[in-house]
Amino acid sequence: MSSIIDKITLYEDRVTGRITPERYDTLASGYEQEQYDLKSKLSELESQLDIVKLRENCIRDFIEKARQYVEMSVLTPELIKVFIKRIEVFEKEEKYSRTCGNRIVIYFTFQADKGMNIDGTVADSKTAESSE
Image (cartoon, rainbow, N blue to C red; front, side, top):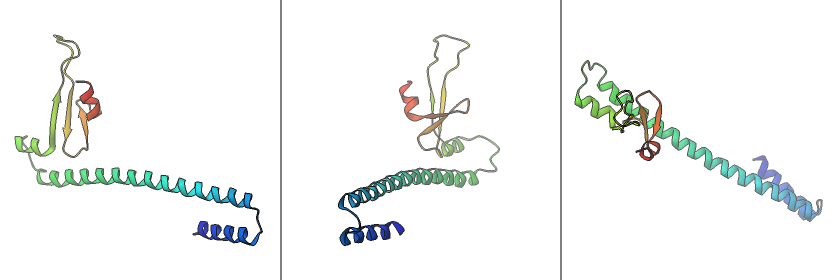
């Protein structure tokens, strides 16, 4: 609000001749730059908010599904279908090796475009596809 009042005051000072045209142009361009910066900051914050909302929806979906299966004592195909989107098993890095294991990435239904490696680290779907 004070920025708007400052702009009006600046314009009035220019019209009444209290400041020179050069000074007015300098101050006005500063306000224009500030407005551009605020708009870019706003779009950045909106994109971050969209990401947070997506995560929140994934978490809510997971909690809703988990409530249905809290008392499950046996792993069933139905339970796997509810919580796991897909499982990717890659070839061994060293063919015919008995000590080198396969890389496995599990994509859960409550994660947006990310999978979980068997060691617990998060794998992006783009990274997993490029390493095939």
